[in-house]
Image 1: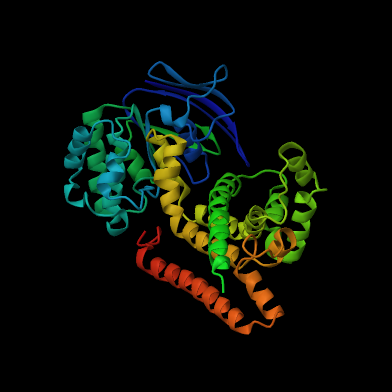
Image 2: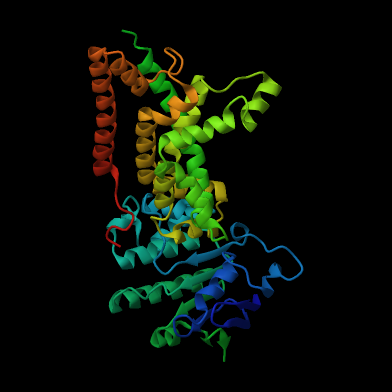
Length: 204
Length: 225
């Protein structure tokens, strides 16, 4: 269960967002520059809201009364738009970098069908493969919340469909709250248990 | 002919390079990505030795470190240590003069890869120190190595500031560039030729090695992506 009620002043508007979610897939949908990525950064702890509350499964990650829990201690998986794979490490090392349990990580690798990539470097694999590696790397940390920032935007249609299916399958298996940011309406409709429309920092 | 200028040069340049490497990386990492008032002034001060004549740098150091200068006097009063005209002063001169080269290389190197790569490591639970040594440092390494080689070459060739603050004392502060100068002054051309050839060989081989290493080992982080 995730409770979010945050306010943050940005350059051209104020981000004001509040929602509660269970182990479902929530899609933050809106045009670019509407505060979607900033929301994810606030949740992950990479940046802090000006005020508000973030509570994940009863653990207060951010509130006005206490020091925010640092990013490293939040246990939140984050898949970046360009995947942000470590270019100097093999796929295997990427996935094991923050893995809680190596065996479990290899199970995730099997689920995503990327065993054959383990010894390869990220610069030598396709976009869809990078996407799967980034997902595996995030799931390997056994997060209690997963954030996905436009993870499918640079993939072609067919690969995108496959990745959608895989994400839903992993979500079914792991049962954690997933927040996905996108500006693709079709994708939003397909993946979302619930959709939050966001524009200029406000939901409607 | 004594070989002491060679060993002295290598000793002074090596120590200066180690100091510059560590401090330059720390400073570049600390400053280059931050936004704060007065940042461009701080960076300009750091880069100043690059644009000033080395004699001016030496003059400044002499003012600070000389027995009547603020630091020099303090060292003399408390430790009875006279810094100027020792090999340590030569290390300081080489350090200050070569520092901007390392700082510039390191600044560029730390901005040359996707910042989110570090953020990703943080979200995976890695401490900032772990992120620095497993992600930032290896990704910046080609640029840092270039800075290291340039720093060493510059420190090895340092002349003006060294002469001002450390003098030209055979066996103590007379490095190769100073030995060349005194040899020419005294008309010992044979000796000058020898040192000139040695220092060209040192400089050439370090740059050659760097180019070779870079071609061989550097995969651009942005390749195919």
